[in-house]
Structures are given as structure tokens and as C-alpha cells.
Amino acid sequence: MAAKTARSARTQRLRAPFATFAALGAALALTPFAAGAQESGEPPAALRGLAQCRALADDAARLACFDTESAALLAASDTGAVAIVDEDEARQVRRSLYGFAVPEIAIFSKTRSARAETAEADNEEARDGDEDTLVSTITRVEGLPRGYYRVTIAEADAVWETTTKRRSASAPKVGDSVEFEAAAFGTYWMRLNGHMGVKAHRVR
Image 1 (spheres, rainbow, N blue to C red):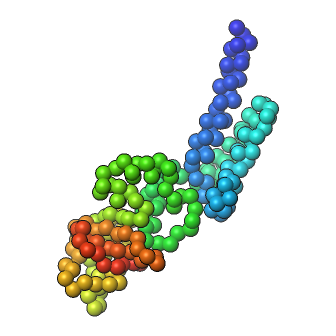
Image 2: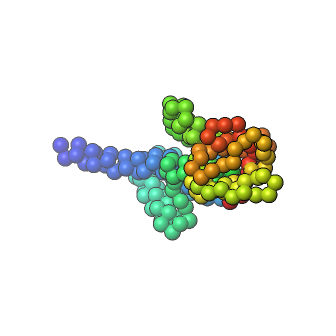
Image 3: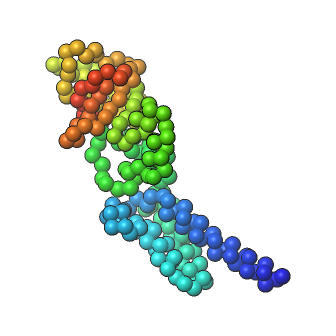
């Protein structure tokens, strides 16, 4: 009985590092190496030590390795050298940077679960969740020379300026629903209240 209890306790101790690794592996470690690691199939530098622990056959050595590497990762997180970002936070970052050219790293890519949620959502919510579109509300409008406009939107207080115009298009107003959609060559369509759009670019 005592032997069985001891084995059970030891099993629980060994499971804990594996659970920690699974949770950390699902998060993003923001390091300069992260982009290249994602492309090569290797884990980010901050998680590489934990990944190597899994290859150790000896239970005691594997546990000691997990203890050491997880402590180092948590210490790096505490000092700000590494940031652990969950899926919701990553989505907010993507939305706040919409319209800017950003590095090709994992935080700016949709996860599998995010894609599944988008596919199952209603049409309007799915469009808002698509990384190629952004739906928000206009909070400020400024007229520019030659009939162009500068608008501020609720999402991240982002500021956009129109670069084309249509004579029949009504002027944007505070409170209007606005949708941005990625177009060709790094350009964007800006649509007001679902109407035909004009080209625009983000300035800040």
C-alpha cells in the first residue's frame, strides 16, 4: 500500500511539469528568434529548453530539467525579457495594429481555434473576426483638402485618411459604422454603414 501511494505521488509530480509545458507551448514567447523558429518548425528560443526536456528518458532527469527550465522561463517573464500572451490578448494586439505592416510572427497569425470560432460565428461577427477586415465606429471626423477625410475610430483610437473619393458618397459622421478590408498591394477599402467604399490608409 505504501509503495502504491509513493508511486501515485511520484506520478503526480511528474505530470505537473508536462501540464506546465503544454500550457506554455500554447502561449507565445516574444523573442527576436520567434519568427524564424515558427518558420523552421522549431520552438521559440525561450521554450527550446523545455522542449529538450521531453527527450530525456530518465524520469528524475526529465523532472529536474523541467523544474530548471520552467523556473528560468517564469523568471524571464517576471523581468519582462519574455512575454506570455494568451489568445484573447493576441487578438487584441492584431486588431490594434490593423492597417500597419507588422512582422510575420505567431502573435499576428490566427490560431486554429480562432479560425474555428470565426467559421462558426454569425456573418457580421465572422467578418469582424477575420484578420483581413476590421469593423469599428467613427469617433471623430476631420475634413481634408480636395474632399478627403481623416477619421478616428473606436478601435485603438486609430486614425485613417481616405486616399480616393466618390462624388456620390456621403461624408463620414461621428457614430457611423465603418469597415476596413485589406485590398491589393497593401491598400485598404473603407466602407461606411455597409455602402461602397473608398481607399484609405492608416496614419497612426
